[in-house]
Length: 231
Image 1: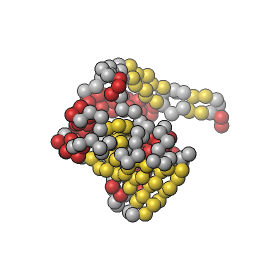
Image 2 (image 1 turned 90 degrees about the vertical axis):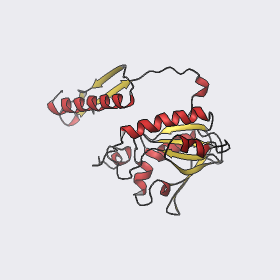
Image 3 (image 1 turned 180 degrees about the vertical axis):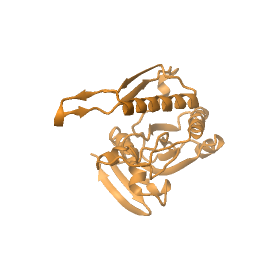
Image 4 (image 1 turned 120 degrees about the vertical axis):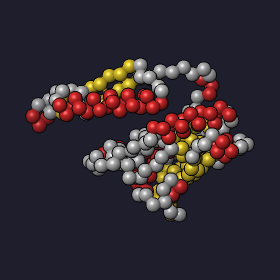
């Protein structure tokens, strides 16, 4: 049922997407909302959360240059690009597991993200091949992305959360869905990697490296807080 609350939320989602499109100069070519998914009656009534789905298409001139998610080589560095707010757990899968919604949402600055994305593209163009895998920090946060990158490759990772925030809550660093942030696997054998990042004005943080075994080692403040096999 399209009540006032649902209509307001739909309007705000569209406005937020419009601001995002304008900030990045990227058009949305199609979209669909689902605002009235209701099934059953009485105690069995289910109200499906309203959703807003978009489609964006682009042309890839050379598909051989696509950067995929799985880890590529043990010893490569793991580099974080973008913001990290450990308190911004609102709406996350992590809090949802505890039946909570949270009260602090990620609030990235579009201007900064736009600069990071264009600078990252320029850095990869300048020194083609040194970024060998990448993933956005979305659903499930850093932990889920490390798992996905490792599971698809048979390799693992060792990460220090303190490199992202020495004071913030570790579960927020590990599971926060930091909108706009990206985790890169960087081949440090390429000459001038650090200079390339600096030249393009990218603020990066090296948070760990790729392991030669399918294992995730997570540390914080010089202590190991998680050590799991993903075989």
